[in-house]
Length: 497
Image (cartoon, rainbow, N blue to C red):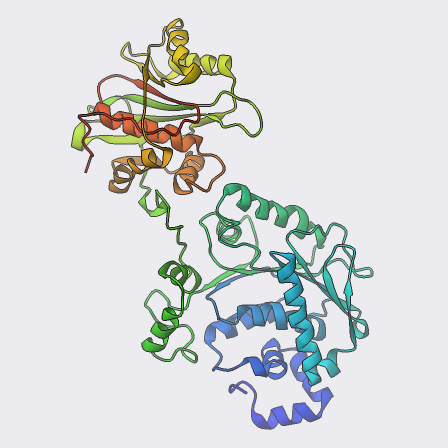
């Protein structure tokens, strides 16, 4: 019995219902190791005891658990804990468990039902029960003797107004409600976050307990947002992370992996290094086709300013869109101060880039406003991609005293952004600590984020700036339309180390 409950006591508990229920009512640790002993194949790890402690010590404290694959987190939290929460001292009446899809919800309900049907002692103490399918398309098990219900649903379903008799959900568990695919785009991440705060949490009441179990899939995933909110004091609860190996490469579950070879053997079973890092070491790993990595981004705390002796000018990269429809791209402007030349050049991205849906006249007005408020040097230049209607734009801007030149870029968006990677990684390009979150998000998530207008404006800005080797004066560079036929090319281009 994994050294948690002595054999003599186990035998007594098996024979006497009153003894076992009185012992397990106050202790989820004993409950799990008695009723779910068949799951305990290795010596219980300290981190597992800690999770059990957090589960049992408070009926209302929110808990967020991230643990490596195979750690037993779902068995403890999603399969066993709801049963104890009903049978034990917390006396929960309505537990709702969320999975990502209906198929997963159905499978999870089958797992709970199978456990109840096959575990004679648990069935005797908790039963009788009956399974139901309700109007939300979710699956439920009702325990009439305890006046309680466990419902399993998916994130695809609405649960507004859901009740069991007079009870609103008093225990809500979200188990892996995100995956790599759903966290790829900001739209997907926002969808899960909004679902939690607009659908799930409001379905409970003041004393409802929320528990979320999952993995760290993205810097901006649901669990990472909650982690940040807890750190800032905007959300209450306990956030715990349990990688298989800690910072000193010490294994958190020596009972299952007693030697380094056992850990290495487990690693050999994993499909890829990225999966190992993400699912076992809890490190956020981008997709294989990522262009810019988050750890490359370097920040500045103080902008040198325009009076700095190395200041070369203010540069603006602009990506134009000509439609105001909801599905259309944004007109995007990214600003930078440029200092020094060639290998000593440094580019400081300014905070608060612009991304708006604008028609053509509004774009011209925006350019006039930028010119009057930020740019005054007579050497200011606008580079316009010479395709389609954009060929007429330089003439239009020239009428307003804004010099523009038409250029014909080459290469696709990915290649253009790739050319900036060396400068980003080396620290030639620096970003403000605040004010460029959307831009950085598009750079890091390029190829999967819904919008890439700021990223396009950025790559135009950096590539054109590099080609000009920080020429004197202020340069405004435009990237217009959706043409992917590529990057700016200059015969004298030299990459900056």
